Amino acid sequence: MEERLQKLLSAAGVCSRRTAEGYIEAGRVTVNGETARLGAKADPDRDDIRLDGKSLPGRAEWVYLLLNKPRGYVTTLSDEKGRKTVAELVRDCGARVYPVGRLDLDSEGLLLMTNDGELARRLTHPSSEVEKTYHVWVRGPVESAAERLSQVRDLEGEPIRPARVKMLEQGKGTARLAVTIHQGKNRQVRRMCAACGLEVTRLCRVREHTLELGALPPGKWRHLTAEEVRDLKAGKG
Image 1 (cartoon, helix red, strand yellow):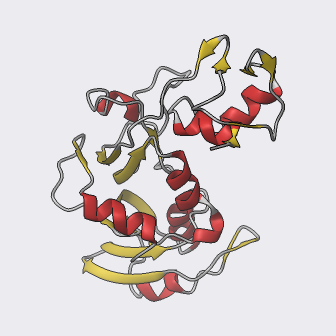
Image 2: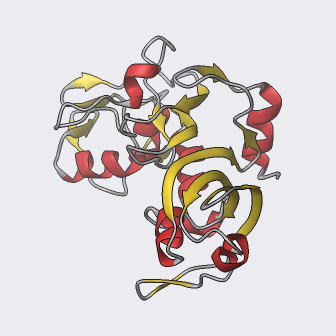
């Protein structure tokens, strides 16, 4: 069955669709010896598809991992600054998997990793508005912090959708909040807190879409269950 080349490269676990488009535009992909053009289709059962002269591997087995990302790791497969990456934490999983979305260096918690490029694209597309819940430890003027955070509608001129916020613990000048968002703007939760005069001392993602972090220790990963994969693909949650 013919499919677009970028989809075939992604399905083979070679790279993401976006990266594949760049490879095609750069003339690095051939079909039956001819340089491919962006938008071209091929049948992997019939055509000889190559990247940089090497045959495209067979369709990769899909792998879905839930990682509890610790602080101090960047959400990339490699880092030019020599920082620790999440790829190091899942190197023993038996497949080349990619992070779905991001958690910044100082944030921790639930991170989905997979070689299923189509699912990753769908979950990260803005139109999906996937819900994410964070536990956020803050200090500063914490009185009515949940109410004030839920009323933030603008971040430095950038409009945002309202968040659901719940106070979990409150002390003298400190608090722990549950913040649920479904946009995922860059450092959105931290910027919301800053807009309310709150300093974030710890931020942990505990839920994304239908997935729960649970008691998984920091730095450890597990395979998703068949039911979890079905629910993700079905858009349940």
